[in-house]
Amino acid sequence: VNEAARSRAAGPAPSDRFPAPGIRRGARKYDVTVCGAGFAGAVLAERLAEASGKRVLVVDRRDHVAGNAYDHLDEAGILVHRYGPHIFHTNSDEVVRYLSRFTAWRPYEHRVLAQVGDRRVPMPINRTTLNALYGLDMSTDAEAAAFLARLAEPVAEIRTARDVVVNAVGTRLYETFFQGYTRKQWGLDPSQLDKSVTARVPTRTSDDDRYFTDSFQAMPREGFTRMFERMLDHPNIDLALGVDFHELPAQDRGALTVYTGPIDAYFGHRFGPLPYRSLQFRHETVDRRRFQEVAVVNYPAEDVAWTRITEYKHLTGQVHPRTSITYEIPSDEGEPYYPIPRPENQALFKRYEALADAEPDVIFAGRLGSYRYYNMDQVVGQALSVHRRMAERMAAGGSA
Ligand code: FAD
Ligand code: UDP
Image 1 (cartoon, protein in one colour):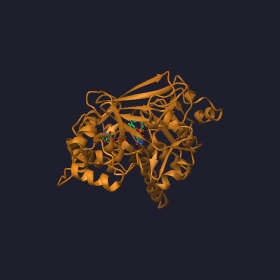
Image 2: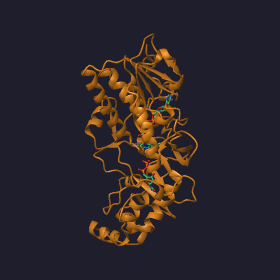
Image 3: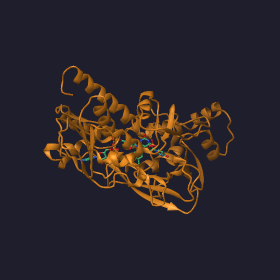
Image 4: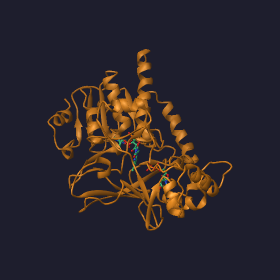
């Protein structure tokens, strides 16, 4: 029934998995149709199949599973992320427990350097960053805190992505690290974006140079795609790749739909398109063992087109005589990667959300379905709690 599962059991090379788009399905009706094989769609499909005994069809218009977390071997045989670097980190034990059923982990703590002039300094800003830029020799948190307090320019009401940073570190460091990067990344000035955007990045007085401080930081040992394959390898799940949900024949639709694509697309952009930011990825392989000191180097200067360069071997621990890297160049055109957090977009989303609330048989989830700037673990957490609510309703005698 599930040809994809059969071919996986034979153990093909990673780049040969799911080669041919097209519907793989048995002659049967489905209870649930899931649009999207990313984190939101895969977790909900797995839960509905395994815990609720539903027959599930998962469709994705791409020719692979894993959504934006998709990784694969490139031509040189190096494991790369097609849609930019994905680093897993979370404080949720429930999310770790759940995903650990489908993967082992490789411990990995992410570190990022920012290119400032001709030097590279830790990002997020920490004591080492301050010492390097200001020619200081501070050795305690207290000294760094006192120094930052002198730089900070308190903002009475913190509303925007600019306010957050200027309030913490003042105008000069804001301009050095955040202004250009954010203008490139979002095509907007930080003063036009919600404070939540830059609040993701802390300021430190310690010399901790990790990008994240979450209790769990690790990469799926065999990659994200392999983890998704295991998640979806279930007798109750069929998978149709290279298929657009909106073109699915009526007989393949279940009574229930889980939709993880852009919510405005589901409703035919009735109120006008929701804005998303996209990226162009420039993937390269270079004839060196190492390209840069850490997995990611950020380029905050506005006169450089890319925001960052990633070198994957740091993330995966792969040993290879060459190395593969990706430049990220933000753009308005292309796949919708980022919902853009700002009040007017949230207001437009609310109008779509009201339409969604009026469709009890369609569940919207994930980054695009919820129009939220979610990390992977947040999407998994959301999907698990959506399933819990559905299971309660089913137990109470409702449809789902
Ligand atoms: P997606 O992964 O986008 O999956 C949605 C799927 O739906 C897609 O595969 C799409 O093809 C499919 N689809 C949409 N419309 C249709 C349709 N009409 N018919 C059929 N299929 C359709 N998170 C982290 O935690 N750590 C990171 O380091 C990190 N780095 C990131 C870097 C980049 C460059 C980007 C863009 C995101 C990053 N994220 C990171 C966020 C992470 O990608 C998301 O949280 C996660 O992938 C969202 O999962 P999802 O299932 O909601 O959406
Ligand atoms: N940011 C920045 N300079 C940096 C890193 C981040 O200006 O060196 C801003 C930028 O607006 C970015 C946001 O902070 O979009 C959030 O950064 P994060 O690394 O969390 O973004 P992600 O790549 O995870 O989407």
